[in-house]
Length: 493
Image 1 (spheres, rainbow, N blue to C red):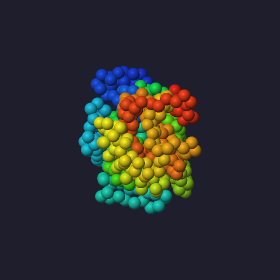
Image 2 (image 1 turned 60 degrees about the vertical axis):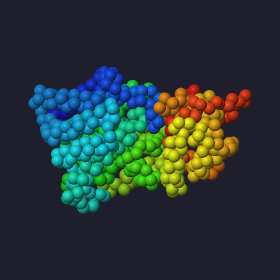
Image 3 (image 1 turned 135 degrees about the vertical axis):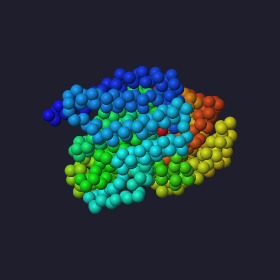
């Protein structure tokens, strides 16, 4: 009898994967026709225009799976996992999130409008019982949130919805993180006897199947529609799936299932405040940008490493379900792994963080100065002040062949160096920014590259105007840069 009851779910999983694989190409062409496109941009890692059809594709797979589940349950006269009607009603705010994200992908939508729709969706979820009404930590007595249940629920759902959008910076990362989280939610729902499995598993299969279009040379991106849709459904289902036997939300497994987006959005929020910048202002200081630097621009290795960390955390969440006493150890392992990434990116250095605000201000002033004439910005005395804050002994620009076009400061053969690819917004085919320091660590150089982001358009415009200095005897750096350019190392870190 148990096997027969699972047949509708299995058929739904096949439908989810099949629809995504079969309709992905059609959705991609439709996205091109309606202008749902991702053009090259400063913070991106691609130089080509790509369709943002992932949200529509994954949603089609999910709805096909739910329809197949309902029809198969009726045909076999078995009880459906979807008998909890609240899970069906949850699709209405999810569709609103998808629609707003699609509109944003087509012509752009203001942050206030997006937050308003996401907050209303969170309110709807709270009314359906997907709420932060009580919680428990490390097996201690549960705490009732009382009047704070509504704001906590909305804040959690909105934060996680946007957190998934924030990690959608390299191919496969957001979809992979959603797959891992949804599988953990489905497992928790299965052991707890709840209905989350009916939505979580088909959506996880749809997210996994979408990687067919998103990996390698990507033909489609999730876009805001896909990342926010996945984030909303994943965050909402987690509030029902991760519960103690008494019905309270268990905070440790909740964090572990969603560790990657939670850690990233938390660090980004407080780092931007320390820098004196708006928490809503985008930059290129997310955990996947740091991982890109660690792996020398290799997005596949960066994504695989971060997803492996997320999978370890999700696995640890299952451990806490069977043995709550292991909760502290289960938290320590993934947090240690994430901390290692931030350490390599220079984010755990108090000196770097204290210099971040002044350095960012100077970089933004110079970017405005160089908007019309990049040479004006590069010759401004403020550049020397910026280099002093970042402890850089030299800055230099190289073209794709490794020929130096501009340099400030003296090159030292034994200084620590970091070569950052410049390739975004269609400004240059390929160029390189070389940072050197005789004092700062390599991790501080990576942090400095992040703080120099506002100047990247100036650097790229300068590369188009400056005449490269050719040398009969190419230096070791010239040879290295030319080789990396030939390997396709054109993704900005």
